Length: 445
Image (cartoon, rainbow, N blue to C red; front, side, top):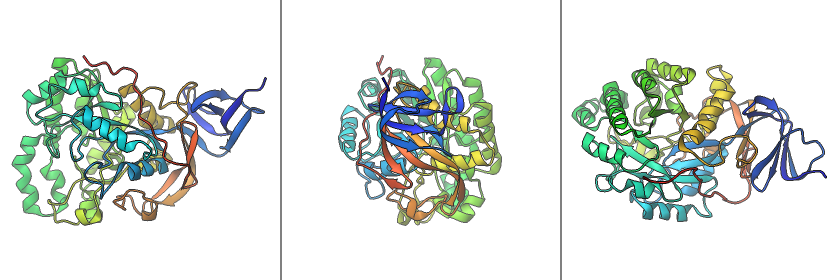
């Protein structure tokens, strides 16, 4: 009896646990049901992937979609729409909304808002605040929560844990890996006068200097080791931190962003002005090269976009009143595919950073790998396609990209979410069908 499938993807070069191989994928009931030669298999739909590479869907574990409270610059529908256009099939959304996401009720509200509107699968961080640090275990165990986020600096609302005593309490509550924004708030407060005196974004990496990043990272590593708590240090920007984190691989995993791997100061500020302003900042080329050494040596575990949109009107405010952050979820994969084209990393390493790594460190159930039994979250890419990032392609409400005009080689041409084609040749298909991501172990201690 011939097996039948809902969808068969034929003839593509797939990145599987066996490496890069020409293999067909049979999809049934939203999951990968077969890998191999499937000639003659019955299928309701067939997708010819000859000349293309077949990758697991990207899992972007750091996005800010601004809903509720800041929907004028992004919301869950527009943010996830941009995600699928860029080959991202799962997102983890950050808690610095209005109100802040600080407990089960706020997570439930976000899940309800996403229902029927989210184009990709999703989960939400709960944020540590001065008044909830002893109750984080309760929140991290609810369905749809991907874990705890701690802002040691650069917070919004009440989401700030600037001192070691409160940081220790936050890390002592719960058991899942904790995501950390590692900048030293006291040092940055002492140095804000540098930015105000300069009045131009070139001062951003001097105000929020290397020492502010290194000091915070050393602090959180010491407390995490003391408590035996696993942490995930977000958007690393300095070569010094890569060396430090290499000595703490047993307790800390590491994220970098495509922005910090691609842009450098002062050129980015010359060209983009405040559009290049983000926290932690884009730094000089030596740091960019240090981050690449972290990628090639294996210190870096994950790529995250830190998609944090603001309108062009907001970004036009005089520095440092201008807000920090830039869109990125839609460009994560194209920018990194261009780095593959340029020989900075292999396609297999990119898949590890964008799909395998997030699944591994966050214990996401059945996502991030092309294996039988996993969700059929898949992106087809054309490694030879060449075009520039165009403003009209950007789905974010903010309407811009720091990579606008940059010619990239390697583009996603189809996105498949749990077996359904949701983007093909730059066109959205179907309706929003995102659901909450599941996790293998969410028991709180």
